[in-house]
Length: 320
Image (tube, rainbow, N blue to C red):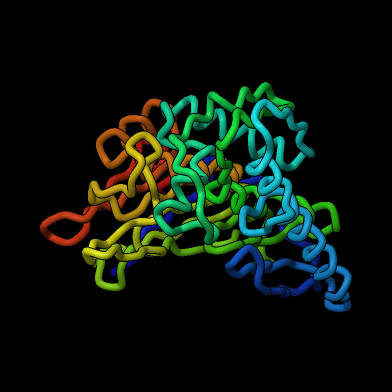
């Protein structure tokens, strides 16, 4: 089948200087893989770049990984009731976006769902007191938050997108404005390839036999993130298939048939958070919400015929 293409509404800038080459680096981080493709002079040394990337990831993990017992988020989760916490800039940006998405989605996205994540077997091992998520109890004011007592933060549904944004910003700062940054399938592209082409990527289908027409996007000043029930699943004692996407409002995995949601946005962090919120809402509510907010989103629904595909108006506008 011929691929459909999504292109930015505006394309600006010039290709990289003549003589530069396409180069790549890759590795592991945050329980997944990362990669960067960039345009640079052939003599560029990769060791300093790889070291800078490793330092960036180490900073994010030390702040926001619930899997690290000494991380800042883990210490907040263990903290006494009514303790106040001032957050470093990166953590602040993620927390602020998470709370804004939680407010806009009426709790379909909730950064205080850590106990729920662990209860259903998708978080760090260990006993945790079941606590109903309530992001409002954090008293977030844009600078500090309150641990009301027993509330567990989990930013896994947005922190990876933040890491992609930070990785892209690092490449810019190091004089590499033409690049594609990726962590665990979340991507952000900037600039051009040497031949003047943008960074083309194909959206992953929810299944190999989904029989959906291929969809390709030009990541030029854009990011894309996806949430789906096909990446991480587990089965309970009764053999029921449990999605890792949890509905904080109901306290259980989603079970409404939506297979995946992909969001295109200038920021990978916002695309990551919004895709999770829309995934929790389900097709009808999610599509209505994306339309109202002007979010560019693609929904893939399981149905009797296999899979059906639905675009928000903002995504339709990107179809070439």
